[in-house]
Each structure stands twice: as structure tokens, then as C-alpha cells.
Length: 406
Image 1 (cartoon, rainbow, N blue to C red):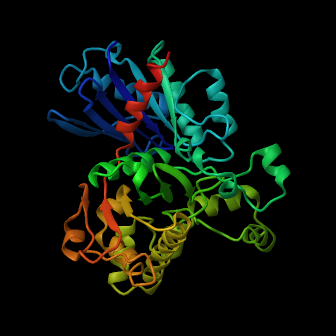
Image 2: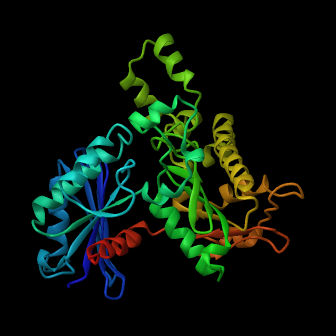
Image 3: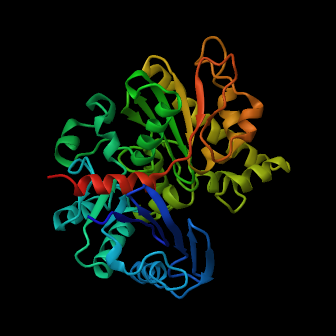
């Protein structure tokens, strides 16, 4: 069996792609079509063996984007494969699988229907995920496709942890519960942490902090997720780039009554206009811009950063208690991997004899940028790790594992 796997992550205005040669588990090429359907749509592309390009393209939807990607991968001058027939499988990142899908699966009509059913729980992600699947079906007829779900790693969370304090019939009839997301990332970095610490996962209690535009924290007990910050949808939990995170549900009712807003308008506010974007008020959800504004004396930006950090600390402290101790904290994703100031602020509140006892080594923290390493000081009772996530590689591996099942 040819083992060249194309991994697709289709978003609302972008399609990210990575091509892997799985014989040696090496990335061959990767890139992104961004600003789909908007002005200045661009295609970024890079070959592992060398060579890259970035150019403006005319692309109006996901299907056209996949077509452009396919043409580039097979291009005589810039491509890395002779034809699309070389691709033996396509793996897709899909955010929400509900309770019906708890592991990576080969895509068929029934799987696509489950993805549709979960639109309401992941409105920013599942619809474009499905468009990516349908676009690949059109461009790669007959090529097996696999869906790898963000929710899958969290299926080990016990019932007492995933239930909300609602009448039980809402769980029984409507499956309203905590599902959790970023599971592929949390699983990948927790496994990498065990390798880095030369300790089997069965011997570790870890808190994994996936901090990017979307943020979540997971308590990992002996290799299994036992609690996580995101819930029924990816809206719950930490303050994020544009999402509000934890919120008293009565606020929604208050906004609807006080401001005369409809459900769609409130959804727009909570998912796209809140979080760091709404709190900082600097016109950007990028934490780098907000940190810069705070350093220049913008008090609202400073408060937004403090609120962001405080929520992270609160979840780490809660999971330290749930786990009955803590062996390691993992920082990953864009902010977690690259923002030394945020790692410093988070860990400053977790030291002391009565707490987890986290102490950073300032020099190690400053030099840890996008590489797997430990950054705690000698006196720290908890190992602190920076581990770059690689969800695409994890998706490629799981795609082949699904196709090898009898």
C-alpha cells in the first residue's frame, strides 16, 4: 500500500494542508490557502526539501482551494508528487463527533451525518470541516478519507466530570454534556512529554495547556483525559482570542432582554467578538498586539492579559487538586510554545509551599521557543515543559491506523 497521506484542516476562511510520506513518517510539503472568499486570498506553500512560494490566488470556496492545493502538489516545477494518484489516504481534522464517534473513523455517509448533527455544538468548525471532506471527495474520488475528532481523546472523562447540573433528562435525551476539544493536540503532547521525561504515561499526572487563538487545558492522569476546560462546545473554559470562555448563563438571557438581541447575535458576540479581542479593545485578538499595547501603558490591555493568565492559573490549580498532585505542566500551541512572558506570568502564581510548587528557570524560559524542552528551576516540584504540538502528524498516523484495521 502506498503510504502518502494528505492531511486537511479546513476552516471557515482557510484550508491548511500537509503531505506526509509515512514510510519514514516525514513531512514532504505543507501550506495554507488563507482569506478564502475575501480580498487578497493567498496560497502559502513550502517543501521540506527546500523551496517555498507565497502568491495571491483567486479562490472563492473550499472546493476551489483544494483544487489549487492539488495542482500545486503535482506541479512540474514546484510539486512533490507526480500525480494525485500517489496520495493513498486523506486525513481530516474534525472538531466535534458528539457521543456517537469516539475514535478516528473512515468517512462514509453515516459519519458525515454525525458531523452535520454536531454543527450546532461547533458552529465555527464542523461546517467548514465537512466542506473540506466533500471537496476532497470531488478532487480525489475513491481515495479513502478518515476523520480524526478533537473530542475523541476526552471520551475517558468520567460521567461525574462531564455532566452539567441540569435535569438528567437533558443528557439522556439531548446528550448535553462536556465533550472537550483539542484532543488530538493534548494526546500528542502528553505522549511526547512522557518520552521527554523518560517515564511511561502510566506514571505521570499532567496538565496540558493548549494556548493559541483557541485555548483549552486538560488534566491527563496516567495517559487518559479525566477533565478538560472546553465543554459542550469549544466556547467554554479559558478566555480565548475571540471567545469568552466561562460565563454565567444568565448573562445570555440578560443580553437578549436588555439589548434586544436574538440568539444569532448573542452567538456572534460570544464566539467572535469577545475574549482578548473584546476585553483589550485594541482592535486585535493577537496576544502579541495586546502585550505590546500593555507595555505601552494601555491599562485595558494590561487587564485583559491579567484576566487571560488568571483563568489559566485557576484551571491548573483545580486540576492539581483533581489529580491529587502534579508531575508536569505542558505548554503548547502558538502562545504556549512561543510566549515566554505568558509562561512566566502563569507560573509565577503557582509557586509557594502550599501550592503546586512551580518555579521557572528564567533563562530556560526565554530561550524555549518552538522546541521541546524543560524550563523549570532546580527547586521546582513540578516539571514544566514546552512541547510543540503536531496535530497534523498525529492525524496522519491515526489515518493509516484506521485503514489498517481488519
